[in-house]
Length: 157
Ligand code: CO
Image (tube, rainbow, N blue to C red; front, side, top):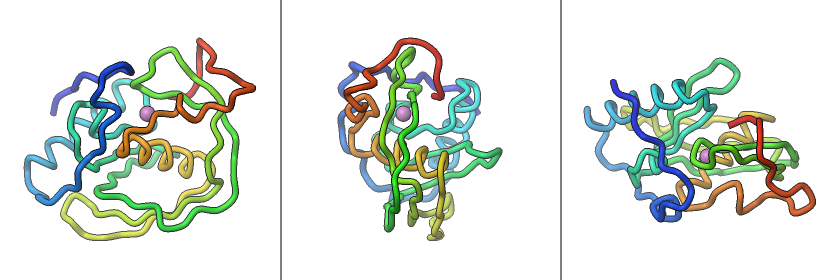
């Protein structure tokens, strides 16, 4: 396993649309392992492949002491709303309040290609929404509620 560099805002790749994963092979598993290690090392609760420079629809999460891998994830249901402060490993030093669904249900594949469904509330719903945005080139700074602005300083990554 290896720690990979996290691409920072301003790099054009973060604005690109990631492509579906077709091969569930050792190369994918190595990327997933590296992404998890990189996320943990940077104290993040989520990371998308584009953030390590790979335009594939892959997300890793570390929420509520649970590590998850979502490949080709699609939101199939969303309910309610929450407004909380968030940040991003690709926007170091920035955070702001963003409105997200309170509950999200996502369909995805695991590292072997098996489909599963995951429902998350609160922080997990927020993290899933944030990471899935990355797959379509969207950053949280695009969605910060104007009144709150983007504050410099501490905040959840
Ligand atoms: Co992010």
